Each structure stands twice: as structure tokens, then as C-alpha cells.
Image (tube, rainbow, N blue to C red):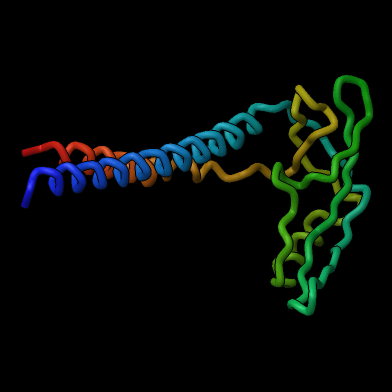
Length: 160
């Protein structure tokens, strides 16, 4: 093999390694951010919230199967002011085809029931009754492996 083929191969490995580091870094950043948001919401002040409305919405897009989601509105007092929020969780309620689980959720958050809500002190009109999962924090090792693999490819390209 001539010298230019060897350099081209090393350059190719370096580029793939850099791309793996970049992709792994983006996923690592997104997962850290998700974990931090989930952790921060657990430190928000707690208030009692009254469910004002709880209905199951339905949609069907271009002939696809019907989907459903729980539409909740709840009221609460925070620092002497009255607020309402329609966010069950920070990401809202997902659309789903599974009606049984959704009906149980609707029963749990029926109109007139009271629940603990957590209020974002920076945006008092943004409260939630269900926290996001912190699972992203427990899986940070996976994108770290991609970053390490990319670094290993670069290191291996220059190793004799």
C-alpha cells in the first residue's frame, strides 16, 4: 500500500471518529438537559390543585387509526394569586391508541378531584401534576460509549 492510501484511510477514520464524537456529544447534551429538567421540577414549590376539566380528546389524521389524549385543566393558588394550567406533565399528555390506560388516567384526574401540583417559580402559570422521568440521567453511559468509540477510532488511525 502506498503512502497516500494510508493517509486517506487515516483521514477517513478520523472523519468517522469526529462524526461519532459529534453525534454522541449531541445525544449526551440532550440527555443531560432532560435529566436536569426532570430533577429541577421536583424542587418546585408544591400546591394543592383542583381539576377543573378532564376530557379525552380524539383525533384521526388522514385515515390513520384514531388517537386519544387526556385534556386536563386544573386551578391552584400560588403566592396569593390564582392560576390555571393544562399541563399534566412538562411535555404535556401524549396521544395514544391505548384507551384502557387513558381511561384509568382520566378516572384518576377526574373533574373535581384534588392533587398535588408543582409550580415553576419562574413561570407561576406553568404547573404540573406528574414529573418527567429521570431515566435519561441513568443512561448517560450510552452516548458516552459512542464518544469514546469515536475517540478510539481517531487514536487507532494514528497508532502504528
